[in-house]
Length: 96
Figure 1: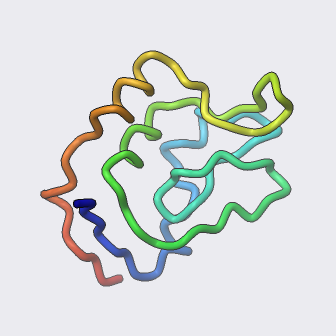
Figure 2 (figure 1 turned 90 degrees about the vertical axis):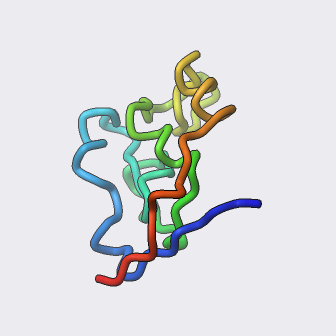
């Protein structure tokens, strides 16, 4: 069973500032929960939900990969986190 905390008003939460230093000039972090790695020309809009694995991207690097696409650098730390993401039990529904 997946636990999802829905967020209202995600436009205020998109592309968190904490991620800014982890993206390079051709790619940016987007999505309501900071879970997307997209080209700077892309709006990077997503649905406003929070899944446990999204926490793993807070310390991950978003950049243009060898295949030419923007994406997350799949480090050992990121792979391990995605395999066993932190619990979202302490998250609750937010109303902004």
